Length: 417
Image (cartoon, rainbow, N blue to C red; front, top):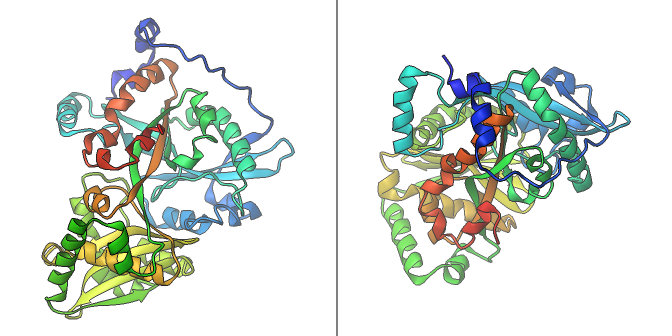
């Protein structure tokens, strides 16, 4: 049984029409010339544009192929091929179809209430969703090699005008643009004109590491109290049995040591979407050795931590972390690992250290800034979408993390200066 609001949206039509929300004065633009087709992975092999897709990003077309090959999880992977009026390919935008839990980011009280309701309606606030973006990472607009911004804007306008029709044809009731960085807000304005609502997702963070050394960063960027706290944490590890660092691109020979460490961190996470597999960790280094680095820390020959990082221009991205919690807390391995990765990045000429969402408190003290990510959401039913616009701000996850508000640029996650 499905939730009546989604299963029979006509029941909401009269109520939605009578609700005193302000109608948008924004005129819906006419659809520019061109078309948007749906393709499966096998069809992309004939398109040279696919080989250039996302080429300037760390997660280029190879990464999307990797994710499709190694993360099943009930996802159906597809691709929008966006063409101009002459049939030329402007962009290839990956998307997936899945059953989305709308309460995944809600607080405990809302989740508890939903749990009771789901005894009566098992699919309450669960809905088949068309999600544009990446199953394991933030989303991006394809602009080919060089990241052609006018081309991105043109393809975004075409996609915004066609996605509702495709979602209905694919029996998806919800459309989500998943975790697109804030620098796409201007290009994605066209989705707001088509009834989408933008809300923040849990932001990434960035740290300026353009310093001669880690010690110089400590002295110039951090407060005296934070410096002292970090040095005490590093000393705890240094006074224990020696910890050795090894660097590799292929994790296959050590995957049986690393994967349990990933699962320990994953098991403690309060927000989950994708579950990575052993094959994912093995294949990413084989397929993308130019962009992937595994940092592995050993104590007495045993792996106690690892960090999967990726390189993009002059930035190093910490993608996934694994820790042995039997020793991680006592040895402060999180801080130890960050220090070693930042040191390596500085030595390689990197200017920034980027990190994923969550675990914001240590990042706040180390002077990270927030790197906002946005969700664009629309229901395929117009009356239900009107209701959804009202409740989305209550469901978005950032409002329940008090640490986020302490960051100097917190207002940027909503797009305010």
